[in-house]
Length: 194
Image 1 (tube, one colour):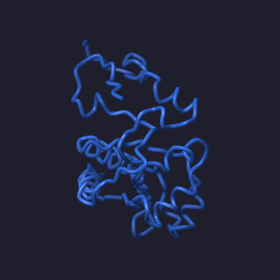
Image 2 (spheres, rainbow, N blue to C red):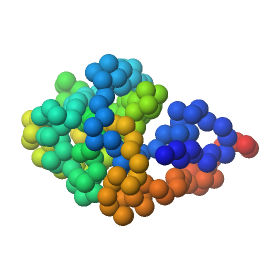
Image 3 (cartoon, rainbow, N blue to C red):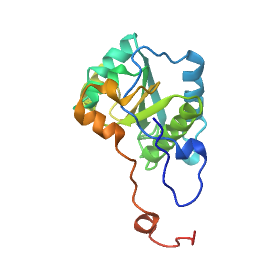
Image 4 (cartoon, helix red, strand yellow):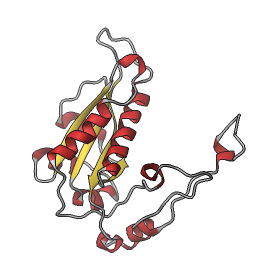
C-alpha cells in the first residue's frame, strides 16, 4: 500500500513514500547484508562533536534477541510488531566517559534512527519506529547502564496487506491517510513562499 506524502513541494521519493506500516509479512526475511547497510547508515549519520552516542541491539526473527524484545512490547505493538522480520533497539549514551552530560545524545540517536529508516526504505524494507515497550524490563534484560537511554525500537520488514492485521482498529489505522500539520503551524519564523 502506497501512501505518498501530500507535500507543498516535491520531495525525494525516499521521503515522500516513507510511512510506518503495522502489517508485516510474517515469513519474509531481511538479509544480513541489508541489516549491515541499515546499521552503517546509522553509523554515518551526523553526530554532535562526533561523539557518536548511539548504540544498537539487533534482533532478527528466530533469534533470542527478537524474543527478548518482543515480549516487552506494550499495547497494540504487542499484537502486530512480532510479525516483522527484525528489530533494532536504538539507545543513546547520555554521558561522556567522565560522567558529564551529553545534551545532544537523544538528538543524535534520532538522526541515526532517521538515517537507518531512509536506508531501509531505499532497500525496500518498511520501518515502523515504536516507543511503546517496557524500558525497565529491556534495560534489565540487557544489563544496560543507567546512562543508556532507550529511545525507540525500529520494527523492520516487508509490508503486508492491511487485512493481515486481523484487528479492525489496526486495519482502520493502517488504511487511514497520512496527516501532518501544515508548515504554517510548525515554522515559527522565516517560512518561505512556496
